[in-house]
Length: 285
Image (cartoon, rainbow, N blue to C red; front, side):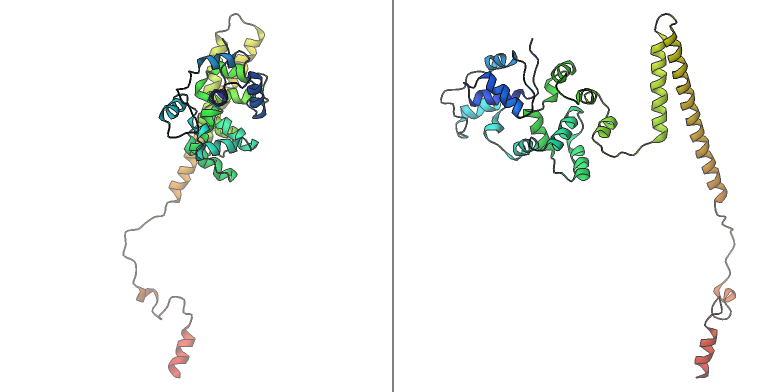
């Protein structure tokens, strides 16, 4: 069975636009647009799966309903009638730095609206949710392929293979890290994660049969990590308690007595006595 391709809708557009276009030319177009080549057995299958267009088919005619319906059913309408979102998607192809970020963002399945806002603020770009959605649809259709299919497609084709594959299952924090988006770090939560991961690894190592030397070393190392994380958490809790205790001692007292009047505090007219000489001089004059 041939591998799928993330730019399948773009390939479908090329076939519908020019049914006589040879497979070799489609492969060339994919390479020119840096979509990586397709499985040689994929293109003939895609051709066979595309239904014949309706009578009088004219993809450029917006008023010919059968043609419009056909393009929409084949999910290629915007390629024949570009809108602003498609133009933004095409622009991404001309900016390798933005395209790299967009593809990683889509692989990680992050919220497009929120991530566009964060990336734009950091990079001074103008990515939009609509533009990225269109890029995903035609050029980088992440949901259309399984994890294994992505593995087969990317293997030996990109220097970012390991990063791309990790992003497919990465939590948002890791995805934001790869996208170089600053995040607030909760030190206590980070230590808890280290302790949890080390403990889970320890449980997995424990099930390994026998008592080989590498098993003993792994248990020893992971045990130390668990203990050190525990001590770090205990230390952080004690430090917080000490801080709260110091704050408790620092609290200002509030005696329940009536404060003296201003007349008693300043019988000469002011508290410091400054300005009295000037006042006496004015009275003499």
